[in-house]
Length: 71
Image (tube, rainbow, N blue to C red; front, side):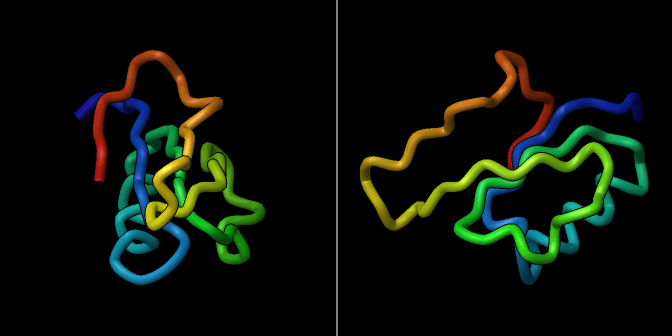
């Protein structure tokens, strides 16, 4: 699989964090949409987008125009 750009919502913990780890192993560029990014600091190719999916006004600003995957 060619490396691509992916958005993982809730990737700061739990299953989402595990998905981020798998994508990093495959050299993908990853955007993580979550409320916190404590566990994500220091990872190359991982960018945090602060969102809270419980808030109807959450905006996904700063994402690339083309994404290859969403989890």
